[in-house]
Each structure stands twice: as structure tokens, then as C-alpha cells.
Image 1 (spheres, rainbow, N blue to C red):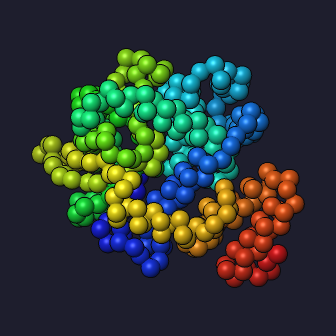
Image 2 (cartoon, rainbow, N blue to C red):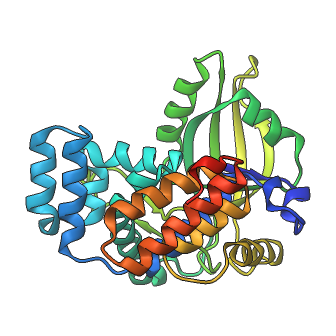
Length: 321
């Protein structure tokens, strides 16, 4: 989750002023959706999972052998390692995991987009409300309270419910932690707004009985009223409104991030963005992973060149290639 204050939304001279995760997920999303994957991507992913104990051997084997017998949404909602691994990946932005899991993120987004197109007519152009209950650190909540017109980006795939009582249970549970604030997000969704796709997944989910609306990653909302729901200042309702892709402030900021990432294709853009914003350790991790996976000599030359540049910027001259 990333916050963008009014001051940050204005085009900054230096993108270092922005929360890094907002920039990374913006470019990462575009990279993933542009890339093409084949069957080898699944094999590569499951090999990675076995090497890093990402799940039980049984679950990993099942995913490898039966992936195409179920939908990406089914795998995402099933009680397996995929859900927790995906959330960790999008939260940590760890290069190795991101690259190996890219095909699934691509497939999950594509299915949500397909369902969104199919279901569009069922909304009858009427706005509706969905809810999400979760915890927020007190530091993050204080930042949210102090800003007006904040943009809030959910960097992962966002699960919401049309039932307020279900979401309120999660918010109440989070409020029991003294270091957290329980938040009930009340989200106003205008289906006519051009935004990241969302869809009802009731008939595709592992749990058919849940009335869940799933949003694709990096969905952006504008924050509205914040109201207390208890006397202990531990539970709050936060109103959100889905932001259009045509929102002028957001579009200008997105264009600025793309400009900083530079040209090129695929992972080159993310690497450029990491370097330009001074995230040298993350950039180094990304290029080392790409070096291990590429057989293209031209690609290797580029990655070595970038690693040399990173070491030079860090002042580690002995390791400059």
C-alpha cells in the first residue's frame, strides 16, 4: 500500500520524494502485461519454488501438473502457497521472486480484465460500494489523517466484499493489536470510470459462497472522509473513491515515472528506474538475477555494464566491471 500526498502528486523534480513501491509497481505492472510467457515459465517457477521451499512438495507438484486445468483466480483463492507468495512478492518487490512469478501475475490480471469486460453491462452504469477490512500501522494511519486529497494505491491484487459485516470482522480483529489501527475501507466504485479492471469472482473462486470483488494490482483510490467507529481510537472507517486513469494529476505523475524509467523493453525499464531513483541495491539484485537467466550475449553485456555503473555510483571502485 502506498500513499501519495497532494505535494507528492505534483510533478516533483526528483522522484526520490515518492514512495518507491508506487513507482516500482507502476512500471512492473506495465512490464508484466507486455511480456509473453510460454509453458517453460511454469516449469521455471516451480523449480524456483522447490529450491526455496515456497510450499509443500505436494502443492508445488499439483500447481505444475494441473495449472491449466483451473483458472488463475481459482489458484489465487485456493488454500495453497500461491496467495501468500504473491502478496509477499508484491510487498517486497524481491527481484528473483518477481521475475519467476511474472507469468502468474500476467495471467491473473488477464482473467480479471476478461471478466470485467463480460460483467460491465450488469452494473447498468450504477455506482456501487465494496468494503475491505484490514489493519494499518499507526504511523501510516497518522500520515493518512494529516493529508487532504491523498491518493492511495493498493500495490497487490485487492480483495473486497460487497458485504460490510464480513469486512468489519477483519477490521475489528486488526484493532486488537495495540500497534495497529483497524480500518474499514468503504469504496465507491463507478463502473463507468476507466481504471484498473475489477470483477466479481464468485463463480470462479475456490470459495463460491463469498461475494468477492477482486481488483487487479496497483489500483488507485482518492481518500475521502475518515471517521472513528469506536471510543478507543482503534477502529476507523475510511471512504475511498476509485480514481480514473484519466485523472490529470495521476496521469502526469505516471508519465513522469515512465520518462524516468527510460526507453527499452521489459526489465530494462525497471532497472533504469531503480538506478535513476538511487535504489542501487535493488537494481543490483535485479541485474544479477537477469544475468543468471539469460543466454543472450548482448543482454549479458548490458547487464554487466549496468552492474559496473551501479558499483561506480556506490563508490565501490574495486568491483567496477
